Image (cartoon, rainbow, N blue to C red; front, side, top):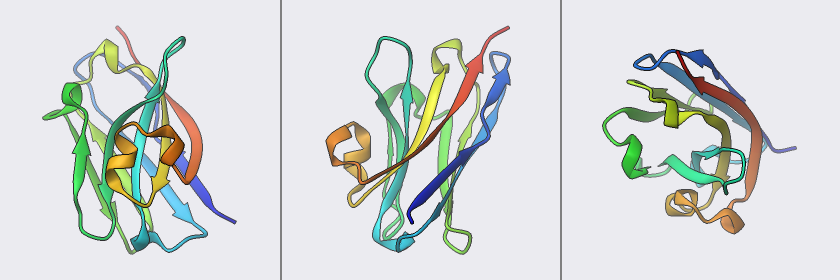
Length: 125
């Protein structure tokens, strides 16, 4: 059974930091890319960041570049998203996802092979 277990969300003040984790099981980790989508009410999920587990290629959407850092621990089958200098507009439900190609996770919802559950990130004072 394929599982993507997301964790690490929470409430943080503007300027603060959070680290999201996505623990994967049930598929060959190195054959996929894993990333994060963000969804806010009334809007479609948008790709935030992703990493290829085969070659390390990374993707960041423009408004998080320089503030968010994605990384992987292949020994633990886990991908991390370090989010620094958080802004209120980063608020949303963050979903972990897996696909064969990293750029699918930039926003091609139909190309996602597996979804994890969401974790809420709220940036507010």
